[in-house]
Image 1 (cartoon, helix red, strand yellow):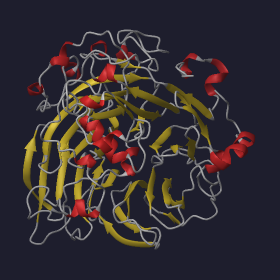
Image 2: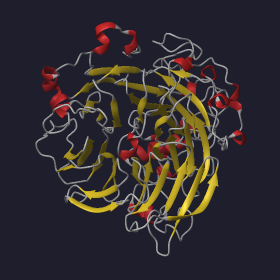
Image 3: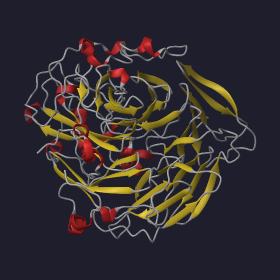
Length: 598
């Protein structure tokens, strides 16, 4: 049975109870207390003034069948463990690697999934003082330190990611609002870099590093005003979505460094961003307490979601629950093997299912039906799950079937649990963006590279330069989707059918590619396509909204067998998907300390 009541409706003592399980239409998700990862002493971390806890996963494909590895930072400490997930209890006494830093704290990290083996992994770690370290926690080596003297940027590293499809290029964002492209093979130099303007647009500039010999950084991006809080590559690696403290989502073509589109938060900064598995939608979250869904093709907000009572810290799509239902095969423009795929994503089915998602819009006959699942966690200690369904994605088309599993919330009514009808007074608005190409045809500039095989051959044959061959000869055209990127952020869904949305018919020529040249006045963007009014777009209600921690939440990752969350106390929790509890179920029943069944 679908739980649609939000925690806010409970009140009293119940609101402070930590949930140990929750139910959706798929079944029951259960917290596996024996699969909790933390510091070895299990003592809650005093998180005052510390950087957010972050979690990274990689699979090293070892022969034991247990190739998953997890890395997480807590305060000044960095841990690297074998991740046993739903199969076995965590053994915290045996970290593969543990590092304690002095004078600076790790803030973010990312594995290179292309190069990972059972003998070696490449892990990038960003720090609060601006440095970036390349380490191998299996070999226990520290190979390189970038921005060591802080000559490139002195501000905190907010996000670091390997460029998809590349073994050597990585991108680093800072709280200064700058973003830098590095090559692990190059040095940083002993003096501050000199830059030459490469491209300038509305509220962004891109510079190349001017030097006799190639050195880091290869490129410097200055994006918006204030901190660049997070960025995310599209599944095909061709586009880059940036969430900034100035409240803007900016989506760039990564190779041509051209601005594709923008969106503005309802108010406050944007803190997180993620792409749908097929690259059609972007979801954002931030200081307006909302998740916002943005269409990549139409460059407009298509829905907002209200469920959080404080800032939204992470949004992420669940590619394993995102589903595609077949219609009449005669109307389907795909290959025979596409019909044989399962409804849900799986590791070995993900690429073909994404291909089907791409083909979803290839005809006018609506041959398949799509439901996207995404999630969000926030400083209110709550986990929200959302469904983005066809009645929201294609409101101008007749529904092909009745959707009984979606919650309907009138977009003009105040959000549940809010005491005011003024959306601006409660911080109800958080943005969710998900790169998308909705409509009835796939645009020519978006090749269906999600369906390419994830192989070294595909990457090797698609090399190109970011800007020109003299700058970064090793950049590749990207045709990979890493599991790690799914952690990016949850999207929102709207389930309102009978609403008037005049801008639905807006043409692609109406794309807002420009941010105002001077400092943007929020009052001037409200009510425009950059930032529609609350009543002008559907308002999603979460499928579930549960308090799952004592401290603010900082991690949400969807894996095949489970959902992983983490809070600022340094506890990394594993929630088994329905039917995936395995050997730990009996132990969990008896030993869930403060958990309550909902």
